[in-house]
Length: 186
Image (cartoon, rainbow, N blue to C red; front, side):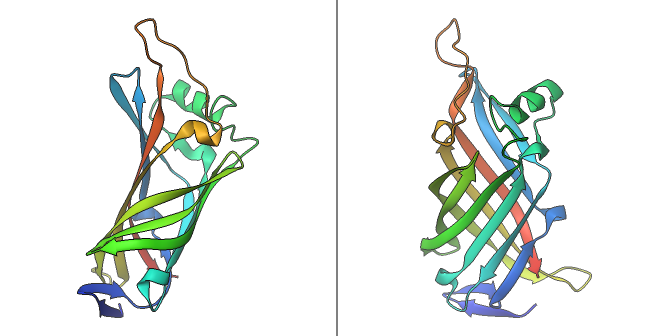
């Protein structure tokens, strides 16, 4: 892989890189009954990162197939795919498109962009930890990253909930997104 040094980081060469879906996981965490957390992920997605000559001018985009949501519990997954939540028949894709790199410190970058869920688009910020670049044992270039963000699901029309007798609600309003992944040259 062609790499370069920028502010003491070894970065991939400028160019477009696709997410390696075999080595990328798009997960989420949400509070359940105010006492625990439910974790899940999306199985089907595609994305790319265009690394600019000036890394602070780089961009990224991601498309997730909403129906690929899974938490490991069939009934819950069906409910999440239905009209109370993602309404995957009407809104089959969740998308993110970066608008700018807000800043960075060391290998941590803050990236702003537009997240669209159920045709509602809001700007969110991602915390991106650059993991480094290298070549795998088969000679293929690869670079890695960890991404996290948190947002209020109700801002995207995901308002279904159930009040609990003990107070509080069944499903927390905040969703935390956790992405671990790798990218390869397009």
